[in-house]
Length: 363
Image (cartoon, rainbow, N blue to C red):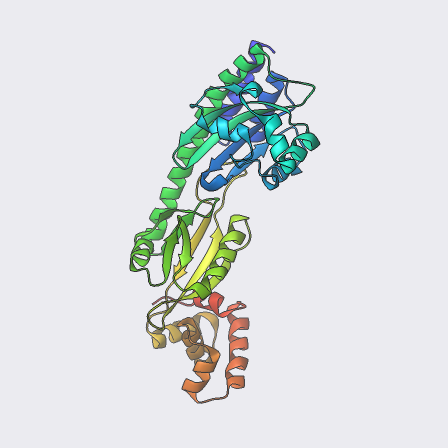
C-alpha cells in the first residue's frame, strides 16, 4: 500500500459520486488498498429493507444470497445491528461483532458466510438518518483475517471520501426528483414517487389532495394502498414490477368506497443509472375518468381513427363502465360490444381497459 494508491482510490470515490466512474470501480480500489477480497456499499432502510447492496470481488449471486439469508436484518447479523449504532465514520473491525454467535443462531446466515468466505469485515456508517443508513465495508476471507492497524487507517481515510461521494449523489438524486415533480405539477398530474422499498417519498399537490380525501388511496406504513381491499393486490403487484425495472404496468381501476367512479392507476420505473441510491425508483400515476364523454369521443376518434360508435364506446370504457353496462345502455348485445372493444384495442394499441383509459384524451 502506497500513498499514491490511496490517493488514486480516493479520486475514484469522488468520481463515483458524480457518476463519472462506477461505484464498483471505486470499491475495487478500496479493496486493493486494504488487501481485501472485495468491498461493499450498502443501504439499510427501516424494517430491515436494503435499498441497494453493491459488492465487489465476489460472485454476482453473493448479494442476492446475502438478502435471502437475512443478512440485512439486525436481528440476525450483528455486523448490521452493532454497525448501525456506530457514529458516522466510526470504524469497527471484526472484533466488535458476534459473528460466531450469529452463525450458531442462524444456519442460513452461517451457510452464506462459509459459502462466500465472508469471515471478517471492517465497516463504518457513511450516512445516518432516521429512516436510512449508508454503510461501507471490507469483505475479507478467513485466511486474510481481521484488518491490520495500517489497513484500518487506510479504510478510515477512504471512508471519508466515500461519505462525501454518497452525499453528492444523494443531493443530485434529490435535485432530479424535484425537477420531475415540478414537471408533473405543471401538467397537473396526480403522481407519487416511491423509493426502492415501496415507500412514498414525494407527491404532487393533486396526489396529496387525493390522499387527504382517502376515498380511493391511502398510506399504510408509508406505502400507497387502495381504500378498497379488492383493488389492493393489483397495485402491489404493479409497484413491485416497477421497482424491479419492468415495463410500465396498469395496476388497477381503483374504486371509490363511496360512489361508482373509478380511477386508473399506472406504475412505472423511473430512469436511473446503475449507481446505488435512496432516490425515487418508481412512479405511480393516477388517471382520473375522462371529462365530458362526447368531447372525449370526438378527440379519440380523430386521434386513433375510430368510427363514431367505437369512439363513443372508448369514451365509456375510459369512464370506467364495463362492456356489459355499455351493452345495456346502448341496447345492443354484449357480443357486439366485445367485438367493438377488440377493434378499439387494436386501433389504439392497447391490451386492456386500464391501458385504454390512460391513452384517452383528458379534456
